[in-house]
Image (cartoon, rainbow, N blue to C red; front, top):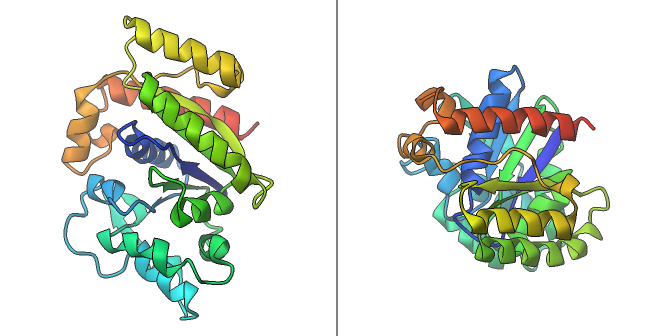
Length: 255
């Protein structure tokens, strides 16, 4: 089982889109995949069509585990749009304060994920900040994948994230940056090319995925309909790009 956090300190950079569509394409290739939404905004949860009130969420499970109640991540497991997901809920925002005084709070999610060995991949959608939820996620993960729009503010968000990454790595020495994925990319725009060059120069060309996710309205439309891009329109540029990204992802993660 490989656990991958998808993170950036800037919102709107394609974290949720990347989580859904990587998971969907890996499932199409016969892999067993789990999505976990650890963002209180619950964008991932809503993007797979879960808009009604959810009885059990990641918040329910984290809280029970933290305070000694018998629980498991599977208690909150839902299959939505053919994808297995542990959903989020707005009350997850309370967890930052509630977990602050709990002993071993950084490892609560690690303990919950450990029994899920049946999955090949677990993708965790992180909040755009380095609070207790993101720390829990990174401590539980093998890799972090960093999507970013090829513009200056998302690049700044990625840089800020990596400053904190070194601190978290002291709690999880095995954690590695799998790479940066450029999203909403337009090869014709000078700013997009400039950000790509800066990334490759600053973090090495090896850390930047060669696959770029092009601007594609079908990706947003798919999420609006609670679907992954392959189910919504398998011929869209977004589907073609995420297919290529999945292939590159597998090459990198299998080393």
